[in-house]
Structures are given as C-alpha cells and as structure tokens.
Image 1 (tube, one colour):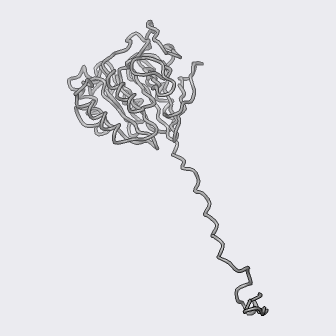
Image 2 (cartoon, one colour):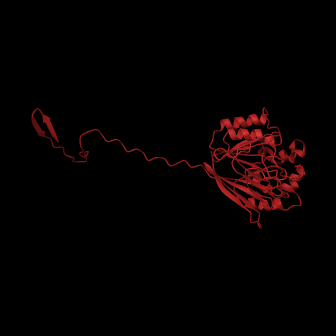
Image 3 (cartoon, one colour):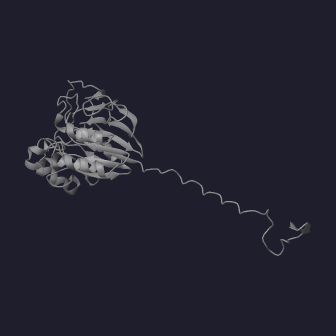
Length: 304
C-alpha cells in the first residue's frame, strides 16, 4: 500500500505468506450479516369432537355416534344430558358407558338438565370424577393447543354476582389468548323444540366482551349452526361468536319449530358429532353423520 510521509510516498509491500491474514482494503471491518429470521410460530393443531344428548337406552344412536368417535382422535366433549332420563349412576352404567364410555379417558364433560333430576347431579359427578371439574360446581377450563377452552354449567346460576360468572370473568382476564371456545348444555339461541334459554345470556355477554370465538351447546335434539352474533342475537361479522348446537349424540331427535334469527344450517334427522379442528388463529368445523346419512356441514372461521 502507499504511505505518505511528508511529500514522499513510500511503497510498502505486505506479504500474505505463511498462513497470515489475506490483504483487504483499509477501513472498518464490515458489519456481520444478520442471522436469518426465525420460522413463524405455528401452534399445534388440535381436535375437539363431541355432542350432547347422548345415552338413551333402547335407542341405537349412542352406539352409532360412539363408533364415529372410534375413528376420530382428539379431545371428546359430552355436552350434557349424557345419560337419560335422570343421569343416575345406573343410567350412566347402562346407557352411556357401554358406548361413549370407551372414550372416557379423553372426555371433558358438562352436565345437562337431566343430570340434575338426580339431586346435585350426583351420578354425573361420580361417573366422571375429576374430569367433571370441582364436585358440585361443574365448570372448569383447560388449554388445547393455543386455544383456551371453557366448560360451563348451564344448570346452576350464571347470573350477575354468581360465583360461576365471576370465575368466568377471571378466566377470560387471566388468559388473553387469540382463540377461545366455550361449551355448555342449554343454548341461549335455538330453533329446536326446546328453544333458547336466556339463563346463560349474561355469560354469553361476558364471553362476547372477552372476544370468545365459538360456543357449543346441546339440549335441542338437533344440529344447528348460527352466523357470528352478539349476546342479543344481532349479526356481528367482526366480533361475533359462532354458536353450534349439537344435540345429536344419540337421544331421539326432535322437531325444529322455532326458526331463529341468524340460523344458517338446521337438521333434525341425523345423529352425529361435531368435529372442530383448532389451529393457531382459526378453526374448521364439520358435522360428521352416522353411516347412512348424507347430511353434513363444514366450513372454516378465523379467531378474533
């Protein structure tokens, strides 16, 4: 390189011999290359599958829907009125356990009104044990992949000031996740013969305020899907909750005489289960019918 000393230029040769550093232009070292960006975070894909209104002795529905569960993996939800007619210990043993009972280890249940025909739903809590949540309460939550899953008890108070409603507020506040699903037996909105029931409307409002995405119910012995809506039943494509009624687990199916606003799909002729595929920021749904039925319903939705 050339080195200036006064007005005389001296040529200095630097040999890159014997394993020394190679020659490079004078100046600061170049900045190191940035590391490659990390791959995008991908939540696990989970399956939630089930129905309500299941075990009715003498009717083949529960046996047929249990056969569907045999080939669908994931977490099973039993959405109330699981053993007719009163949810007693013997009815669980005779009308539920022979079929859905083989999936008991992966089942997360909620009680229905028929369970409470046995005082305190004692047969229900005895059958499911710890999987049913705290004895006598029957509401609890768990994580499924990136989803917050909330199981509520529609057969005890969920009115303002009730322990269940205050617990729900706390659950939503302490779990600010992208995707939330709740399930309980008695729906707020329904076209079936049992209609809708405003008992859980305050809970619906709390779920809506907490940006919940999906609600699953039973009680009406039929299948129904609603467009996203708010707690007053008004369409809300941006923040509304999509409600599914899947009272198709095996009890005799009943009529749908009260078409409800925002109801998009209705069927009361097919037993089956609702399968939900839960992804990091979206979900797919599919109604899976028992063999011999052509009815199904499928689609996809995004979390808020």
